[in-house]
Picture 1 (cartoon, rainbow, N blue to C red):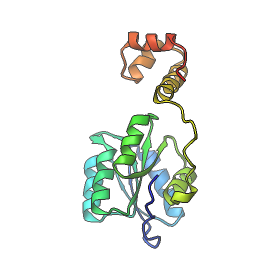
Picture 2 (cartoon, rainbow, N blue to C red):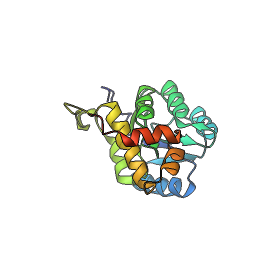
Picture 3 (cartoon, rainbow, N blue to C red):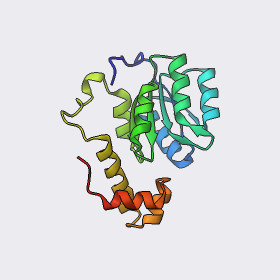
Amino acid sequence: MHGESAPEMSDRSLLIVDDDKPFQTRLGRAMEARGFTVRTASSVAEGLLEIKQSSPAFAIVDLRLGDGSGLDVIGELKKRRPDARGIVLTGYGNIITAVTAVKLGAFDYLAKPADGDEIYAALMATTASKPEPPENPMSADRVRWEHIQRIYEMCERNVSETARRLSMHRRTLQRILAKRAPR
């Protein structure tokens, strides 16, 4: 995304902040197997405390934590260690949040469930290995429409459940579903 270089590669300190304990444990093991020294936290507060004690070179942070947004953890890490590389995990495929994450200093974001290989590749990516942005990217309206359609299908075309999951008014959702896809 930016012309930033990766942290000193000899420093393989990694902080994982995720309140899904089984996922956190699996990911921690996967990253230790790839040579990282892993510390974990389950909340924004714990994550901030870990960063104050010792700012890691790498961080994998869940976007939605019980006590707030993982973006706060990324923001604090970048303040304390500008060369740190943070990856945000989001279970919601939220484009706006992803953009915010990158603006706040996250190096990349991945949709959950991401596996160890994907996450490792994102942590280690050089700016050069990142794909070029598409020539004619989908409009924001189109991305939003596709996201809504995907959630709608996942909810087995149940309008009420889809509206609840998207925190959207049911009638607003019905209007969106009735329209054709934007360009």
